[in-house]
Image (tube, rainbow, N blue to C red; front, side, top):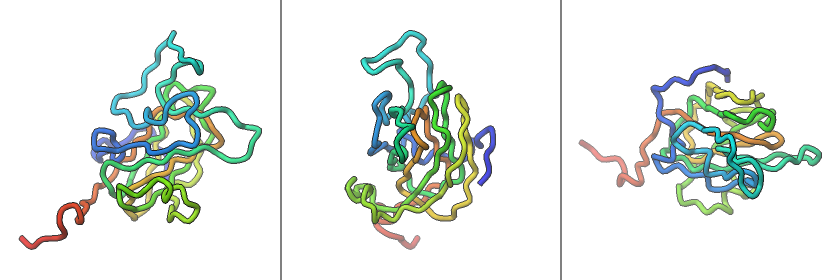
Length: 185
């Protein structure tokens, strides 16, 4: 795994909301909603915008819990299953309230797998990005070397904070079951 400054745009974003990607769960999205992670447009800043929970932020933001053990996480169902080659954990506009580190886990499962199965301690998650340092207000880009395809990704942030966007660029793989199985030409 290496960190780079600019993502290569030749690989599609497998998590894209435009492809049907969705954030299925976040253990805490008190300040800003988990659904913002996959918005197709770049994050924006609204100088004088506030919500009933504080300053409006364009991203996913959890409450501070630095005195407590643990971390926050969100589960994303990819719009297209595939092999992720590059992850962008974008902290745009999160300057003092971004997570110090983040990690990614993946698994391959049916798109309609119930959420409780994804949250189960026995779910077969495997690490695709080990815990890595993040910079605030930056598109933190990581090259990944995993050869395994995934359908779901778990973004873990340590210990809490805000992430504007998550982009998971990779090679999509067809769902042969949805296509009726392999067919001869």
